[in-house]
Length: 149
Image 1 (cartoon, rainbow, N blue to C red):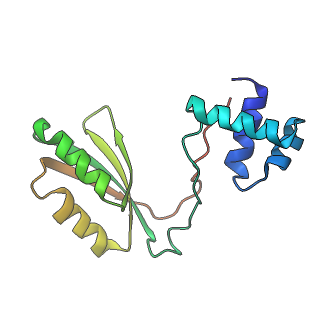
Image 2 (cartoon, helix red, strand yellow):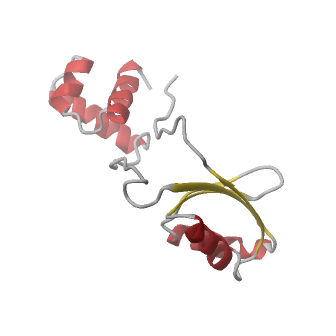
């Protein structure tokens, strides 16, 4: 990945709605050449998609929680992962090292919503042995940008 690729990625991560002409100006290329560089990064898998960044509070999901999950019966792992995939309120799922098996990031309407998601959805019959939940009080930094250095 060269300097122009880094500049292209930085531009797209910070100005996702910028034009190919703006990217071309930054890269000192024509708009079609800039677009081709972005398409090359997509084809290589460096760019996996585009999306609008939303404000969860404005959309009715003001509570963020992180949930560590321990799977009791490892044969239920695939069922757990299928369940996670179906739940829109589970916005991230990471397989982790340490005492727990997974770390989930949840967006909920409130504590009752979180309670239902934990009690009925995660703990009922899919092999979850234990959860540990941390509720976010405030967020100083949250980004989807990947470091380029």
